[in-house]
Length: 409
Image (cartoon, rainbow, N blue to C red; front, side):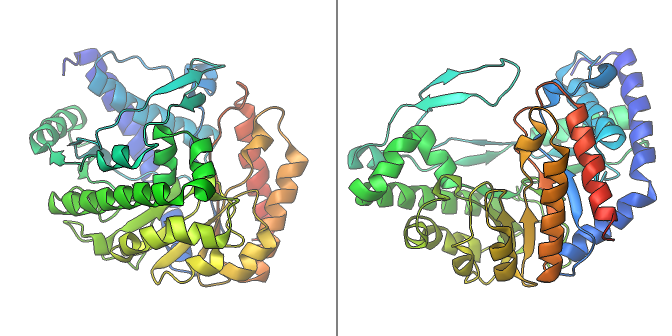
């Protein structure tokens, strides 16, 4: 790190402002409310925004970085984007009174590297079109997949902790953090095959797909055990893939064990396959992995209307994702008070011109449906690929959603 005194002074001023916001009384109220919802106590729903197209959001240079040193730039970005959230798209944002350094580790992978052709309409956007080349089209290639090895780097962690503490002093605590579990094999497998070959092989070559998912599951089991042994997991994460993770039902003790953390899973490309086929190629493989963890959050952009009954057979299932393409009434009726109804509002409503009437109708419908069926629920707007360089769209979305919720609570 080669940070200048000017950069250090800037970061310290930013840290003071952040510490003031982190001390705001709203933080505790929101933290407690998120915890209650995850503990299955219905409350006013949490509203979060994640996966924001930050390259389209720079109002009045609020997100423009001044530091040059990479470590300093990362810290500056942490402060500036949280200030932006608080000022413009706050909703139920929770700011913790700390600066986090995440434990570093390296992963040897399975021996394959993505081979693809891409098309980008906006070079600043990481959401682009991919055409993946099939590298797992034979049993021999599947057999050649390697078992990953994970290596922790505590010396790197100690160095970064020292740097952060030197910059922040007594302004803001610095905390060494671990990681959570995010396992979505059917998001990863198509990157080595393409989507079409996978969907065709569900019918034409199921044995090959079983061999692939079996190997990916074995590798994930190996990863989980290595991560646990190396103390790389975190017992008290605040979010799990964009959703609040606060709960009283996990011990929160370090070093984190698998039994004390959340499992996060999904199979987005399987939204339209049958429940029987989904169970055969997804649930039967991930069930043993989920069973080792404390709580499970499952589902993302895929429709799960006809699969919730199967998800409910997982004893530690706690939160179920409900996409904007799902049948809200059916999902709420099945979820009831036994799980968190994690609603993903439609990001298309902010992608061009802000669709205020559609947003009002969507949020009102979900509130009425969840309240009628006694569901603890939340709203997380995510997968926001673009707002077509109209940051006001997200600001208006937050204002509209909070106004609708206020009319019920």
